[in-house]
Image (tube, rainbow, N blue to C red; front, side):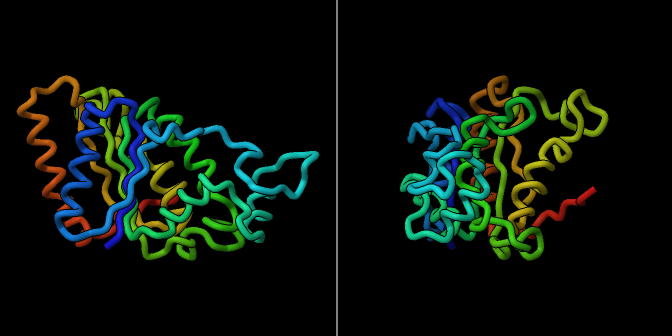
Length: 223
């Protein structure tokens, strides 16, 4: 199978970096094809503007969605760096996002990647959303770390249910574009656990990845 792993963490030696490397190692050892987007290492620019496109429909007034629709109709309508990332998403059977939970969401560099790469007319729109989404049949998985312990992310906990926190991503991005989301993989508070405990977490991640294509999608409620 074909897997795209997107890493959004500035420190290669972080737990996110370790989870990223473990995923590559495990999936390739199992015979899967793996492509990556290490956003900080790539110095990916999260700012979405006219540079997204190699040509423009309206040079007087910028409306991104209209320019995206126009770019889809043109040959090489998207800037080369965006086209390369878009092709990775279209290529994969499973997409994994590896990131630290920042302000109850993804880091800005990953949000900017989404804003620039998930183009209207190519990744969604014109009736191609949810069950009729462009990426129907593909799976997506969030692998993230937190700064607080697991107890803080339980129903009734300090921050609330982690599933509710992640729902805008699971429902509003993955399912919206047709991806079937898997149960998020959460590594809680890695900076405050021992090296031995971190090793156990990495082993748990490895074991899950070995069976990842046998997992069923996690259906999220629209309400």
